[in-house]
Image 1: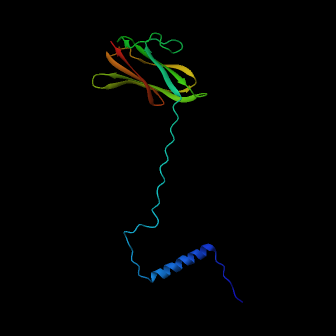
Image 2 (image 1 turned 90 degrees about the horizontal axis):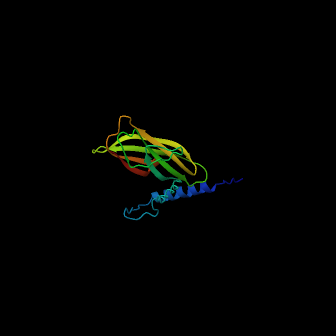
Image 3 (image 1 turned 180 degrees about the vertical axis):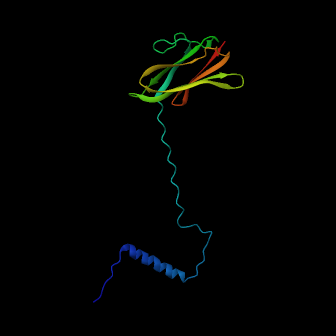
Length: 171
């Protein structure tokens, strides 16, 4: 009685490869180090371009400065120059959200004073908002002791990106 052995295709491929290695071991072969390999090294696929971030739907449409804010948070009388004795300076920021529905975001202000040697931070604030359509927000700084005379700047940012900058003076 004869017994037949079954080989899987994988086993057969292994045996053929092993046999060709054994045959090659008995031959002297020279290796040409200058030859181009038959198989190139694996190429790194080209980097995929990062998808562009959608444009921010919240944008600053107006910025005004003054000493008094109306009930709707707008500036009563816009100013670019203030007296040293003006205790409080307000900034009113109008925004627009083009998205359908609410967009959550952060609105921030950074107040600085140019003292001749560089900008000194006066105050910095940021608040989270649910922007929906057109809206107006206000921030303020206060100094009951009187403001030093000179040039000041307020930067308005949306989600950390500066959207508007306004310079004003204290006389």
